[in-house]
Image (cartoon, rainbow, N blue to C red):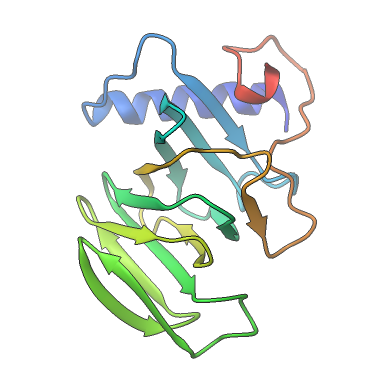
Amino acid sequence: MKRSEINQVLRDATACFEANGWTLPPKPKWDVTDFGLGDFQQFGLTLVNLAEEPEYCEKLMYARQGQVTPAHTHHVKKEDIIARTGALTLRLWQGIPGECDGEPCTVNVCGEPVTLASGETITLQAGERVTLCPGTYHEFWVPVAEAIIGEVSTANDDANDNIFVNPDIGRFPEIDEDEPPLLRLLSDQ
């Protein structure tokens, strides 16, 4: 990704957070990723770590229509994914996508169990949440122009806990420094 593209995404995300009344902490930890696929418009996500403690993590994410967070699960992390503004669509599998399609997949939506067939989607409206346990594969996108997504989870370890279906996925993008950074990203540290 070009640094100029990252800087613009940071401006867009900040404007969306401010327009929706989200005040960020004084020194938020930002992350902008194309998952190493080189196509942020199709595979992109902007994240802000609000709290990162040994026991738990809280994030805000910003996504635009057309961007997909690729199918993945976690070794350890249990997470609630929350539609904070707009809407959020998730495709869920109770096992490896392609190997378990059609099999039952049960998740809690707003604290209540919901069973769907692996490979089906659910759409959350603003304020709704889904709880995902390790082993539940998920990909997600926003069916609206832009949205804010929340995540509250057990400890976060992006370097070791993500299991992507696509083996070509990388967690952080390669950056072409075509202009100075607006701010430091997690991958710049």
